Length: 93
Image (cartoon, rainbow, N blue to C red):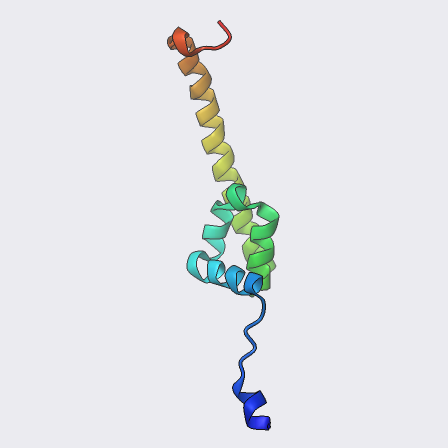
């Protein structure tokens, strides 16, 4: 009886296995850059639950938020200016 029980592996839940696979594939940095797409809180939870240090996750989360802020700020800035040069695309004119 013990052999049968010892031979079975505890697979865990599907959600936990999927989160661990995502962490193994992308790491802390990849999850931090994917923050707006997944959710920053979920990315941090996956990283910390997978064994990363809190300070390491905090640093990468800060870098990821900063990178997305700069990228989206530049996109919005130049996107608004693009509407000035292309009046046919401007819905407000």
